[in-house]
Image (cartoon, rainbow, N blue to C red; front, side):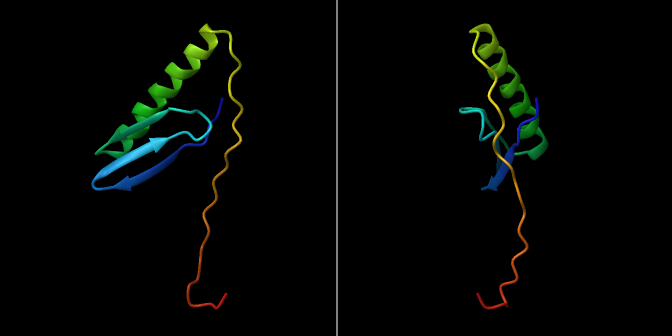
Length: 74
């Protein structure tokens, strides 16, 4: 399955999370490490759902990047 993940950096820490998977979050000083840790968290989360006989969450999150020209009037 594919899930959208987001990363945010603040105070030399990068947080990575999956909005469609509650509680799947990882933080590290290194972005790649945060993403690796998040992947592990997601795998464990999905394994626990499968063990409980629960359905896999459907990804509903999409990401877009907007280019905003602040010199244009709104």
